[in-house]
Image 1 (cartoon, rainbow, N blue to C red):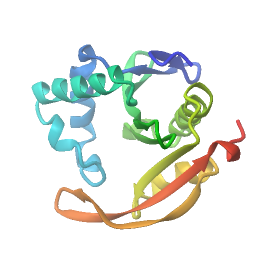
Image 2: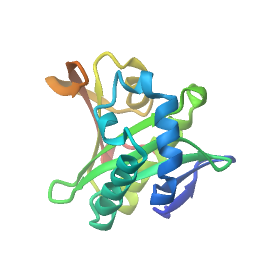
Image 3: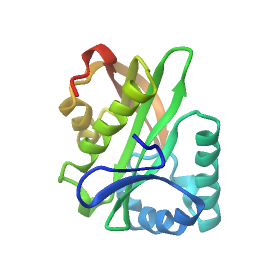
Length: 182
């Protein structure tokens, strides 16, 4: 997989977020703000266009340091979501996937296909041994993705993530390279 850009389906591609995408990301976050507020702890980092540019810069730095990447999901050149390998823990051969999608784009299998591509990249290109996904226990839509992809629900980390006005439990899903059937 070319990390910089890869086709997911006929009209959907995955491309590393760049500074030039900051206005698109800012607008997409604003359009989805009320529903993202429920599940995304990073919203305070993208409240202005300048903060959004800084957010993208920090993700590009992580990419330059070979410590994961954040990519935009584009459909016909329109930004419709974001997916990431949140980090690369090389000594332990682990990564974690994160994702979100514009509400009108949900329910079409896009995130499942994107995660499948990210898993292939982690196991094949990066030679990692484990991929995990963590979701708030109440975020049933997000939890459906690792369940569809054959991840094992490994447990719950109690009171693990601060989301605006509350702290939530996170369920951890894990997938080992030996379990992945491409």
